[in-house]
Length: 238
Image (cartoon, rainbow, N blue to C red; front, side, top):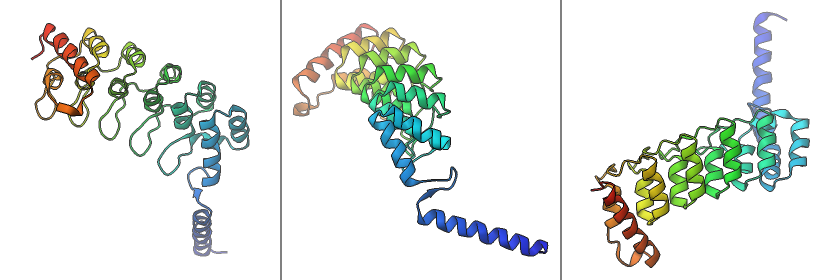
């Protein structure tokens, strides 16, 4: 067989493999099917550690796979707070800072759902506490507007950037003011949040806390905003 014919054969084989792989919905990078990816993601989401172990024993590369939304098994374990599954996936090479198609990391998944234990495991495995989503949001900002005070404290203790801004120029303190969450606002101020940071339309946290949004706000948020406004003024807010 001459060199030209050999190259032609290799090209044909590669094309056939590509076509077959697409016919069975295969992950070309890791040589697994969508069904296999779905299976390990389902096991991670349900917290079935034994099943996760069995699947990775059969194919260790499953730990690296992503679904069409870019989510890994670690994302699913994190969003449900399955600490033991998270630890096992990390021990088997899972990327602690993997991002889905929206730039969301496993840490952010844990934060969204309020799973402090899961967030602690990820942070102890070098999760990037300041990673941003496609919209510029950090885990700290999300923890604030989700109202997870304990996680806000955890993130700050792990060097979260208190004055980071999202694509709208909003800081964590802006969100605390928006939601009328005095406890979180105080925590942020105590950690050197800029009380006069401005968003993209020039609003400071005090502007937002003092804003009258009429009947759109609950009595609790209105009362909370007044308390936040008073706190901000005490610390030089304008």
